Amino acid sequence: MSQKIIRDKTSDISSVLRNSGISDREIGEISDMILGVNKRRPFLGEIIHWMVDADKLDYLPRDSHSAGFLPSLVQSVPIIDSIKLFKEHIVFEKRVIPYLESMVFAEAIYYSNIHYHPTVRRADQTLSRAIKIAIEKGAITPPEVQRMTDNQIINFLKKIGEKTSHLASKIQNKTLHTILTINWEELNKGTINQVLKIRDNNQREKLENAIANRINSDPDFIIVDIPPLPYIQEADTPIITDEEEKKPLKSISKITKAITENHPTQWSLHVYSEKEYKEGTESLRELLLSQI
Image (tube, rainbow, N blue to C red):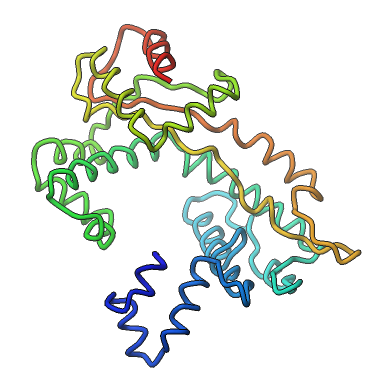
């Protein structure tokens, strides 16, 4: 939720808050809390926007249960009970370290089984491409997209026709093909850093055009998926020591340190295409890396 939207006196959110008797100053504080930038009382923002916040303590145990793996791994109550304030910031007592370690472990499982799962990534990137095309052709605006559920936006995209409809059908039916995968261990650190730099700039579009030319395909149906490096925020959870010092969990817990150091190895780059490519992936790999 954008701070600008909340502070904007003409926005729906701001109007609802104001009609409820909340002053502009209080609306500003609410905005700061949501974004975790409340300087006067930072712990208020940390409750709802932080490395271990109320949202995570709610969805991690709930989603673990729904996904069917280790539903009791995250125990919210002991974690909440160990909260203390240290210089207006939230910290946790040492006794809760085993529970925080379980939370770190749960997040690691989430990355591999949900967030970074190949099927999830492919569907997410296909949907993003269809939305991008729909926005560029003026069929919908970003705020309109944000107000829709997943099913609503997919149904809308199917009605537009042409490329957006075709891509939307690929999410639920026969998916795009994965024609190239490059794993973490295949690249050196320097190359990975270069790859990450092109996640959100025009160079990724150039890569897609080059691959489309190589396999004789439409660039809109070529998707170079470059995820951000996986990062477990909970590893930096502040622990208050017996000496009243604040230290990050990963500096105290060997388990947390081991998980976080190994975690980036789950990263991989994928190229999705409507057309299969049967001439071998090595030439595509060389082409992609030569463009970086």
